[in-house]
Image (cartoon, rainbow, N blue to C red; front, side):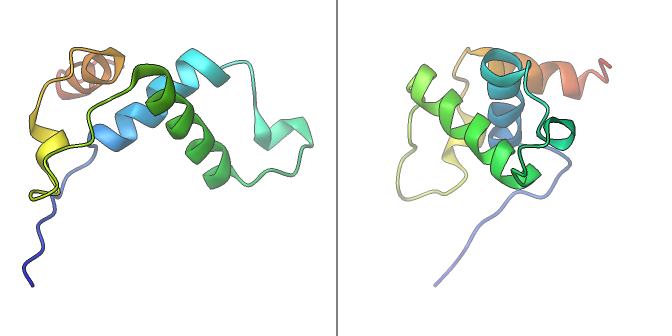
Length: 88
């Protein structure tokens, strides 16, 4: 079995989680809310909400990196472009 993965600072999945936070959860702060929600669970919730809201394509099924290389023209792509341009 051959596996592929991209190595880098950020990828589409991370950008989708960030976009989900900005769009759907930016008023939430689980670290200081006292909710007890683990931060990785919060990030996962933002990611899933973003995917549901934007109906992103799931990829080719053959290439696990397909979604990383195909522009979706959505807020996650904008965040990736800003990251690549070192936009704070």
